[in-house]
Image (cartoon, rainbow, N blue to C red; front, side):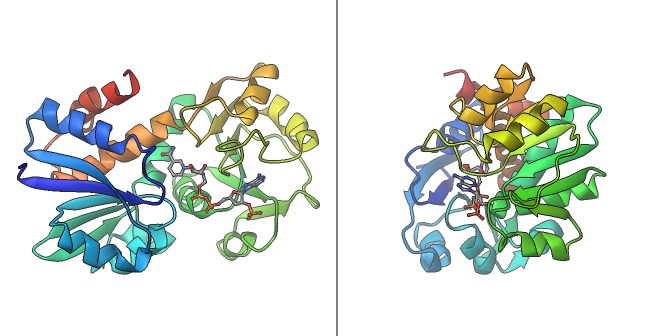
Length: 265
Ligand code: NDP
């Protein structure tokens, strides 16, 4: 058996690429680790399950990121600020929590270069952590959501927000689908009339969903815009998690070299 065991906790979890990504990096870097998947039904059991399975680290996906936050003994500053943890590492019997989704997204949009204004479609957990990191990095982020309640937190944090009913379109450099619309269905994340106003003004369109071309990205292509799906975000959040899992012993590009093979298979 490998010296260090890792897993992804979620429900569902069968679709996750994380085991392949991390195991390819362990193998390529000759690190004695093994990464599995675990379908966790009850998020309250996260901490107990972690220790029962004798794990060294986990990633956490839907719907347990808030439970993961509560399960930790120590949180890094950013995870504490955004209230969501997707990476936990055990050190001397204590659980340390991190959020690598948001820095993963920040890195993924870095390739678009000259981008200042960003429109997020969606106001869920992923939008929340990524909006904060983008703001800290100097981007101006506007949040457009189907319904009002989830916007309250963003309003408190000083973001410009709107629902479909009170939205006044402006020019945004990037338009990003931060919802799950298009993941299991063929729906757009906002009414087509709104998208037909904002997409033509954008330099590019980004989706956090990966592994398929969503209706949103198809529409962006109809408008002739460059697009990017959620694969790079997934890869980069995985690399940053791997850095934590292996106590920063490997460089980002070194890990990337092995982990990105998961997207070529
Ligand atoms: P949440 O469940 O927290 O939030 C969902 C958001 O989507 C809400 O704002 C909701 O609006 C909106 N929404 C859902 N369905 C529709 C619809 N049909 N039309 C319009 N709005 C809709 O989700 P998360 O923030 O956890 O995840 C969002 C997406 O990010 C998922 O698709 C997930 O797979 C992806 N993701 C990708 C990652 C990657 O590495 N690529 C990493 C993490 C997440 P309302 O408030 O009105 O209900």
